[in-house]
Length: 176
Image 1 (cartoon, rainbow, N blue to C red):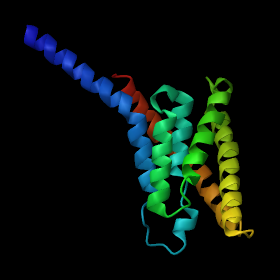
Image 2: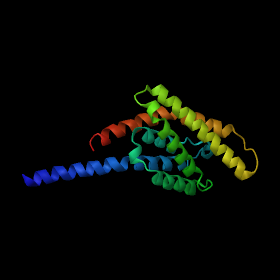
Image 3: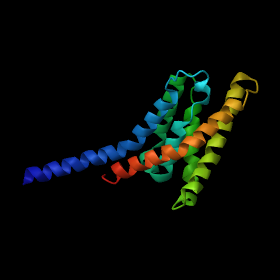
Image 4: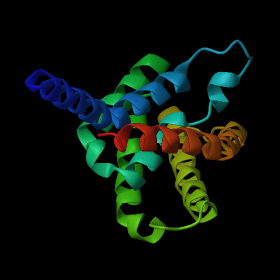
């Protein structure tokens, strides 16, 4: 009997550990997905901001499990692996987290369309910020077309990403 009780407690600890690491793991996976080489000409410039989607979701629903230090490391790693200016993605993710944290109460118990519209505003600001920063680094105004297209892809894919993250959250975090 004592062995069974120990095994059950150990299983719950494993579930809790998995639940605590889930936001970090899914956000890191989203960062890898964002830099995945796709054999489509010009795709790298318009890759959807998967990491931003994960940060928005987890900051909205479980900000305690996605600390700023982890976001900085994930963002800096994404920059290093993608060849972007170091710190750009980390800065965007940290700004996004702080903005979403400040607006969380407005999104609580709201319809998905309201949450989606919040993501549209956030991602639009993030894309504009990245475009402006890259233009500053290059000392010229870059074409904004790819940033607008990237924003469109990001916004269009957000419902699917949110559904996937939400189902994962309910399946794992409810067990923990």
